[in-house]
Image (cartoon, rainbow, N blue to C red; front, side, top):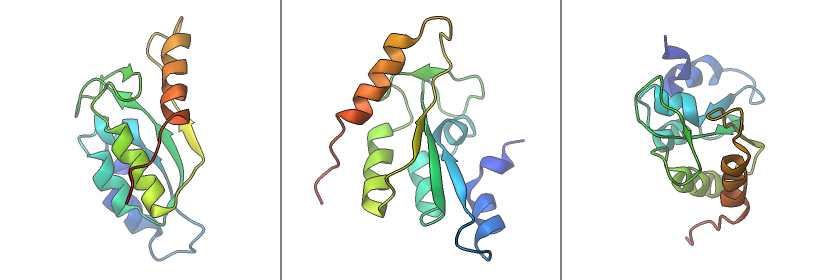
Length: 122
């Protein structure tokens, strides 16, 4: 049941509560659930306190697997640009579970993507 990743559902649970209550925007769960990450984080604006960043190979497939950032379907650059525009600068957690036995190079590629990312000019 992916209702718990639906940003509208999450917002409904926190919108009338203390401003310190919010969400962890989990990009992988959004993508696997068929929810566009950019739409989700816009819905949750002001209530995002953490983000799990993940780029996946397929949209809407619960069995989709990780890809180095910028090579999958998650729109990681768009997500990072939106976070910058809304003033959210972290924490952002890099999740990478594919090739668990030997994924150092892929995880490093994700870290390098984030470290070298430059927000789009307004």
